[in-house]
Image (cartoon, rainbow, N blue to C red):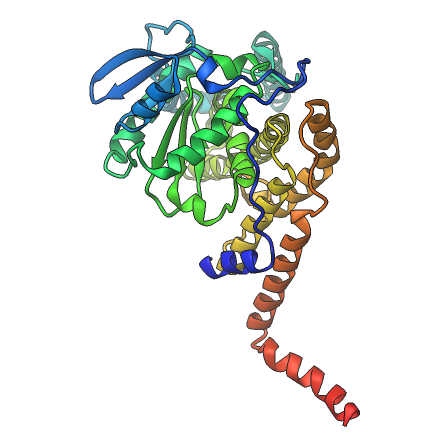
Length: 441
């Protein structure tokens, strides 16, 4: 992969981005907000040092620099909603018990089912199916809300407070697992990540969730090309990601995508979606054990159903990823990043998968294929360019980074195809050039 990055740089695929100077004024509208210098923003800061939490008010650059030099994690304090007293993970223990109860209940009704006339069986199954669909419909309507930013209607069962409790526990486990590999805040990578994250945040303060979330940055010494953001605002970035991205615009594309997941509460939506499917599965499982006369066949059928049902979640997960791509691109556009670099990032991912041979069919993945994502982003770029113009952003350069990246992609594709065919492209080029030399002689 390092040789691939060197190739990108040699083919002018590396384009350094220019950060907006502190105090750059954006057009104040529904889509754009006013940026202010950091030294003019009075923010409550919390420094987490082991088990002690010390609130500090920042009002000058010297204090900011002195705090960043400490080996602590810097966190901005925003308002958080009230926590619930009951832990929401209880339902995770109730679910397997409920499935087992449905299995035993269906098995118990099996003898009575055998004795029923065929016509009665049809009536009972139709009634059971109709009642299940009706309950799911009413339950969905009662827990429908509007997605922020996009305005899409969705089913949400888990409350925000419950989701916060689940995520806080997950984040606590991650911090404990990687405590020896989290870089100190004096590391130079923090300046890069914080500068991009802060620019994304300050340029999108018209989004209420952006102001409500308490954003924190953690850089983990890990080789995986990965970054993820939790709904509680923890931004985890692996050092391996910097082997892939070559400028701040590309980093903004990734962070924008991950921050979009947090802003849109996709984690809560996925858990709610899974919970609704669990209710449906419990009803079907009880019916299977009631109708099928053999325990062995019923067990195999239940196992097969559980296997197949997982693939019903994949299209839904891919749609959430596409929504995060769209909103993440919007966040980056309003922050005046070069949104064309988002296409370059996913093309790089595509090239990496081609080189590593790790590509899998899209229908078997929780994420859209990199090719699909590139097509979606390229389709959205004209619209997002208009959004940049409305925000009075500097015009994009005439040199499109996607052009150079396509040359790299074609070169890598040719090399991989030649390797699979057992050919040497350098010899092929020499053979093709030889007749021309003879003609010149």
